[in-house]
Amino acid sequence: MRKELLTWDDIDKLIDHIIPQFNLEFEGMVMITRGGIIPGGLIAAILQLENILTAAVDFPAEAEMDSRQKNSRFLAWPKFIQFPDDQVLASRRILIVDDVWGSGRTIAAVKNRVASAAGLPYTCVLHFNPNRNLFGTSKPDYYGAITDAYIVYPWENPHGQEGVLLGGLDV
Image 1: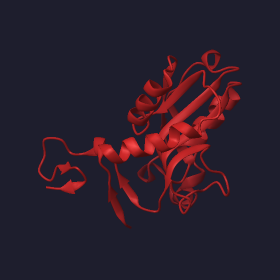
Image 2 (image 1 turned 120 degrees about the vertical axis):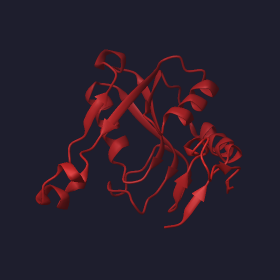
Image 3 (image 1 turned 45 degrees about the vertical axis):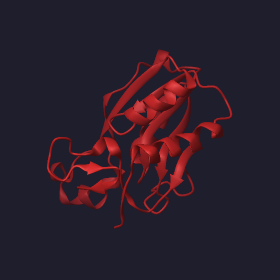
């Protein structure tokens, strides 16, 4: 699989591409931990959003599954470790932010949970990978780029360790 190392300038360009796509005002944001925290924070600052919430979702690890479950691991139910109360989502336009839509399982789980709380969910990611998408023609409402690469974001650098990525270069 092709690997793409991004710089902070790359992130700025992606955000600059996403912001003009918004055709409505949002009344809140749910950032998916951990990948959605930094892009969500950047977008929230630009949009001057005040109601910023987080969602943490986990899917069972293969080690926790029996052989039958491993064959259908993409059908596993998500475990919500952290999620906003329904009343803060109800009847509000909520922007859900993550870094990447790969399989789409995590962001779809959060979107469905916001909708079940009577919120109006809209999804946003920096990168969309249609080749890994498990949801047919579904895609993010807003995204910065389409890719088939494994993306390494600048905040994923192994700070203080050998092989630190600087400016997209492995040094």
